[in-house]
Image (cartoon, rainbow, N blue to C red; front, side):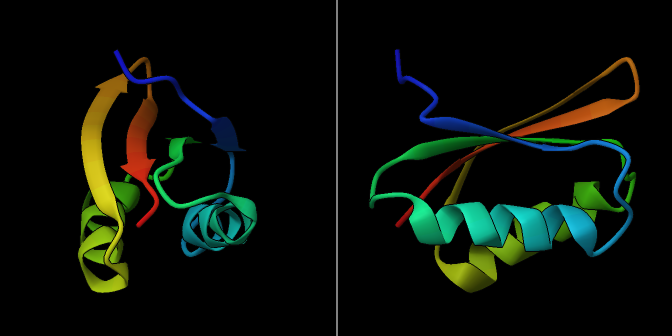
Length: 76
């Protein structure tokens, strides 16, 4: 099982906050690192997969529970 390298807590932020916060954390991460993004913005359901595809990073997981969206992204 893969280990999450860092958690990016963007709960309470509205678009484009979660992606801006994630991009900032990715700059500090190493290639292959796994980042967990937590967001409450419903727009993240479409924003995060689109952003991952455009940026070349890999979206490994997307889940929703109790109003929180959780994504696991592998840095390219």
